[in-house]
Amino acid sequence: MSKLQLTLEQKIGQMVMCGFATTEVNDNIRSLIKEHHVGGIIYFKRNVVSKEQVSALSHHLQEISGEQTNIPLFISIDQEGGMVARIDWEDITLIPGNMTIGATRSAEHAYEAARICGEEMLRLGINMNFAPSLDVNNNSENPVIGVRSYSERPDLVAELGTAQIRGLQEANVAATAKHFPGHGDTAVDSHHGLAAVPHDEERLVAVELAPFARAIQEGVDCIMTAHVIFPAFEPDSIPATLSHNVLTKLLRHRMGYDGLIVTDCLEMHAISKEVGVAEGAVRAVEAGADILLVSHTYEEQVASIQALCEAVRTGRIAESRIDESIDRIITLKNKRHMGEETEVPEDFASYFATPESKALVDRMFEDSTTLVKDEAGALPLDRSAKTLVIWPQVRTRSEVDDLIVQEYTLASALQPHMNDVELLRINNDPDPVEVEEILASTEGYSQIVILTYNPVSKLHQGQVDVVNALLARSNTRVIVASTRNPYDLNQFPDAPTYLCCYENRPAAMKALGNVLLGLQEPKGKLPVTISEQYPFGHSASYAKQQ
Image (cartoon, rainbow, N blue to C red; front, side, top):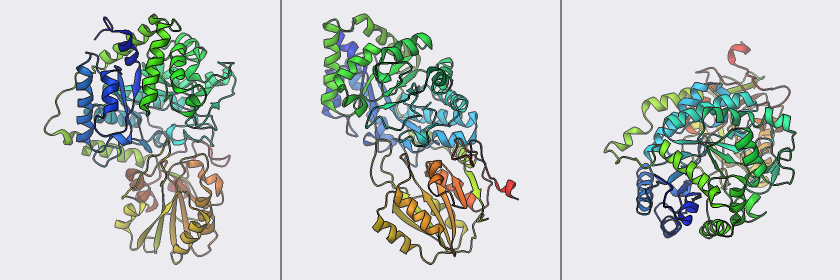
């Protein structure tokens, strides 16, 4: 692979990564590859339905690209694990999310999870993962990071993040540390607006930048930018993605990074509503970015490519600047042996969700389930009691959450061990009428396990109302467990029994069920501070209570 004899249009195309809307090659993505020479693809849940389909799609895309150039495509995905996993079928190994791993404190778990993920993704033709998130989640009201972070402690984020980088890259999948310089201490979701981190340089270096510095030492292949303003580094209120001070002076020169810089999606409102997608692409390259991510809209993708070509032709951007990015792109594609994919073996399916990988993941969840308190001595559960499990589920898609209807719930984990367990599925944002209906449905149960699910900054009020109403009943044993955001406890601090499991995936529910039944001790430690009473590192294990 070489940049020699590439036209300007081919060079620019290599710098643009695009998404499309179908599970097969459609006219838009075919045109982007053949006519506009794009060098990268991003998959979302809309693109993936089965292992066989994804593998075939990846091969087809590479075939179309191979007809134009000997430079293979980056094929990328956001496969962070846990609740941010575009591929989440039962016949692949779904690894834990970052905060689950943070609760285990285990770099070995972090490494093994990423290695398993990388090996399975590569077999699907996916050679780049937009993970791990190295954001330090020290803002309990962060609406977009939350459990996508390992911890509030930069040293733990650095240790676990670099272990996951190593696991992915040893599997020959390019890892991407994100969101530089750090999206953890924001109160605005950059999908919807422009956020700022106002801290001084000393604090940013010690906290936000520390995990990225470790990742650079580890040799991370890619770093993804944040659409966030950092006044300490950029005085002109320019988001990091578009800031020469941040991407070139800070990341390249001061921190010594020479790998790929990829932008977060330029269609996010922090860019698209402020400067526009195409102009954002030009400014990002001027700032120092190598790959421009435009995830959704064909017209914006083409406009971005055309704007970049025009910027070079008019002298706004020197072609030598483009060549720097092309060198980095080709170097990484060579380093990770992209384009050397083999034929799909007959026993293709046997390489996924092996007994060994499933056992490893089960152990990770066993080590993560965290008992915060059990003041009422409600644990272990009374196996003979009439028991209800209340299960909130996401019914509205967001930028972070895909719609998930899980057949395996906590009730599934409890039923083999208990006489009478029923499941009540509720909306994760119930209105007052729904709250009354939920409470009416809970009459007659002597033991209720209510799970909370919070993908935003604060738990939806309807869930809070249900929890508080149940806690007010004198004749019912109530256990509360958060299945995403551990900070939920702050909205009903008097709950006497509270556990955290950081996600609601089947393996997490299996581990939670075992803890509730007393079949295993809760081994997790809080990776963040819930309150002064429940700080980082807190755990109330059965052994400590006895």
